Length: 497
Image (cartoon, rainbow, N blue to C red; front, side, top):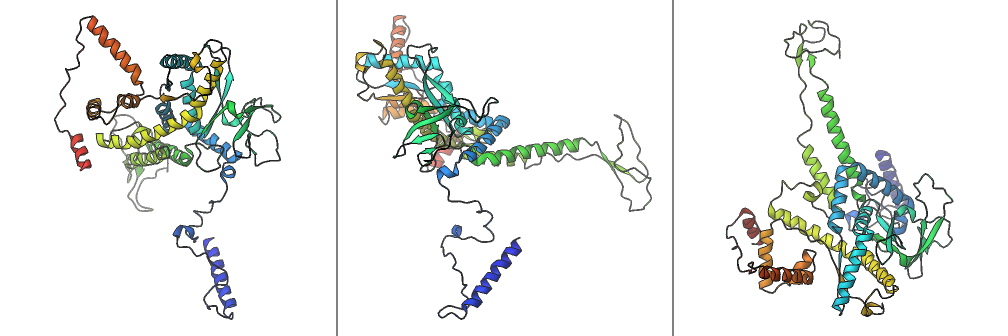
């Protein structure tokens, strides 16, 4: 194929040169057709790279993420997460690290009593509806489905004064059930206004994968104010998400195929206890032996072989010495698209030292903070507003200072902190930061996912009770910081230098 294509190009080159030889002002060697002039190697198409870039296109974000494409990616991602242990572990770890035990609300209005009341009531409501579990499910769905939808509904069975609930639906149910002429403002079940803001979502009442689903299935049009659409927007104009592990899907398949191939090779070699072979030449003097004839061997018995034949045991060459290294490299490449370090993805830090582990985790934790910020903006803030709107309608429920939504309610969300590998080092560093006023108690407690005011009040209660019981409540007794230079400290110092 390449030879044929090369011949066609060469023929066109020669033909163009012969036709242009008589044209005035044109060099005899200059081809008749125009060539792309580019100073970038990646912009030039050659015989070597044309197959590699053959599938590159200029489709828009909506066209590239068409319903058929997203359906195929979702099905394959779900298959890998369901059948690949590494894929399952990576997605669960990511969801647990992002959501943790759930976010905690801190109101920052001028009325402290009202703030405490709202925080307690919202926490009780979140426990009643299982908000933390639903957030983890939404994060898991974004990995395998690319997006997740939540409907703000009313549920009378919620064990709370506020009957608001969040009902999760899969991305398959948000689709265009009918043909619409105006495709510019109605795409994939979402109706947009002239400014590109979503107005409503069409939600199928039954999942397309259900056995009871029919082509004429009914749907509900839900206003955008009642829909939570959680996905990552990678391109301008993108309205639907694709799975986070899309670039790693071929790698997951390769990882499983390689493991199965190594296992099959080892099992095949183990099926044969030994082989018979002869050094005699063809038609040489050796007793006749049937090829591939199995011979049953007894344990601890001395056997004799036919004349001219020898017996050798199969050598076990599986798994190969590169098996572990291959799995490590391909797993590292898989985890990279999720900003996850290898030791977190593999659940194995045996090859890390203290400094390397901390350095790899910095990028990962920064990515986690970014995702938590998006989750708070897209989901939690809207849930809080919906909760407050419904709470205001309940007579005598909220304090008077919070019975209007005309003013902006300042608030923030606290997430679970990340435990330090060496608590002693972190405590010493925290003490130094507080002593030289480069941090505050609010910042330090926020890193642990706790409210500094709540913790100080609790600590005051403990100290007061200890004094009442005659126990020592002084904080002067503290361990002296160790001056021993460990291997990790020496490495940290060398890196800093």
